[in-house]
Image (cartoon, rainbow, N blue to C red; front, side):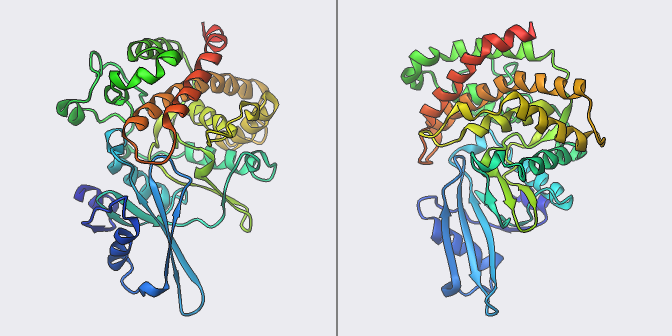
Length: 370
């Protein structure tokens, strides 16, 4: 973890916070990164929106009456199997200089403390608000125009790469060392025996691997440009500050170079909601809305006043194709989380929802690609 500290240039605290005793660990962290804070004036609150990590809000009441707030994120159990934490922190630092990511205040063995953005996280209603969604489209375009350089990993976001995973079911120590790609470990981590629950949904790992190869072959025809993408713009990762009229993105764990259309498609897929009991695909944005959203996005991305109809339609078509990859990716991701995560969330059911949606849309979209 020391290499992460050096890359980030921030305070490194050699502690590991026990996720079963969060507040004790956070208070210990604060003694180093905020030594002047008086414990009696510290207010801690556990936030519950995330499904990868645990998040604690730290608030200190100054003598002036002003509040200082920042967040402490404790990484989810075994998320290091498929998240490059060094790259994440490096990317946050670089994007922060450009005003596109929060400032990091400190790093510890299994997490980091970072800037709090005032505002509200989006929900299924606000994400389609005419005062808000254009800000999201513009902010995404700004991020996609950023050139981060070789130190931030100039490579395509190779989802679920099978070339290095052939024939494996469980992750061996040797494979764990060699697997530096963000998502190529997914099929390795998912074990055959635990898929029994999902036999009726998708039969086996073998079937999923075959499906992935088919999907990869068809999507290899895409002309969507490679950009630096967030790759996880669920509604809870978008903060709207009404007073300032701004949008901010948080949680860059999965950020990497990827297809432009994937980042857009992945965001659209999140319009339906995240709560298991509240997911409603009737909320998925209609073609007219997507056209308007993409139009605003392209105006910023291409630096033009009026993108042409062919330009908009091209991106729209690519987004529909990449929506399949989004469903498939997060379906497999959820299977991994189902086995390893300690977060109180039904990852198994979420995997079924995302993969079932993939199969519902697959034939129609495959026909467009063939």
